[in-house]
Amino acid sequence: MPTSAHDVRSQRAVHLIASGRVQGVGYRWQAREQARALGIDGWVKNRGDGRVEMVAQGERRAVGRFIAWARSGPGYGHVDDLEVTEEEPRGITGFDVR
Image (cartoon, rainbow, N blue to C red; front, side, top):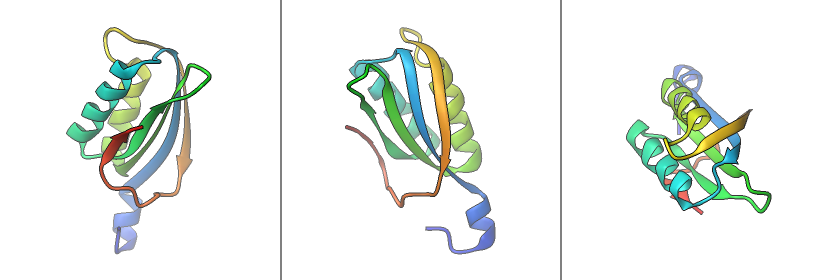
């Protein structure tokens, strides 16, 4: 957990919901691999409505890069829309596929 005001400002947490051709294990696993490569904590899961839900938290620039990746998705997917909501960090460690 951040211990100083500077650490808090350098951290970011977001809740994302991607829609389009994103449902399926491939998108989720690619999201996990991207998050791990960027050092981001959180999770990703399929929703019953065909969208993919994610939570990402970590260093501000890394989370921004993850959002950019989520907007474009892996080459075989297609993201029609990405809802991004800022959140308070949840204290999650690691990045899980649910």
